[in-house]
Length: 237
Ligand SMILES: [Zn+2]
Image (tube, rainbow, N blue to C red; front, side, top):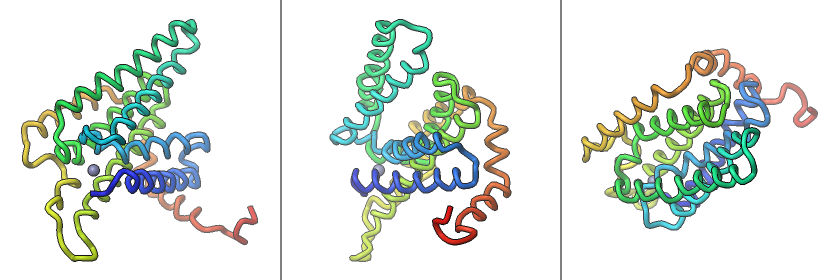
């Protein structure tokens, strides 16, 4: 299994590279690149939230909690007094750091349902719904941010699988096939719950028309391809 640092580095590089490609193709604005790289990196950490003993996981929950608290606070800033904002921040933080963390700790088995594509989709739709309804992002940006969480998530699962194959010893570890899977084969009940939760959260996502138009258009990928290499002398601007 890949360790925390490997996951962090690979997820950050992969989502940074993808976000830059989107910027080059003028799909996203410069200010969005930072958010997209960040959420992609967080997506790359997410599958391991089921290993409740590790310090990185606790650290990640604390970080997520702080970010979540701040984001809720920023959105509500124009409407409330400072004291109210502090209270909102504390509630947002406590909800993620303590309530969500405890629920996870008690419900999850490491390398179980949270290492599956279904869980990745759940976090995609969850993020999209959150961005649209709570943080007031546009439909397109909400879908794109959710997609980056999913992207980072899949990068994590692929990395875990790669580490299951010991390249030097040509030995295959027992963990092969426990990371990149559509659902948890050993626990169909949990898989069913996750599928249900994914469908439920999908209902709360905004219309994806604009997002689909960009992502399923060959023009987008031609645009990325055309902007990949400089047209004249390198770095001449
Ligand atoms: Zn993992």
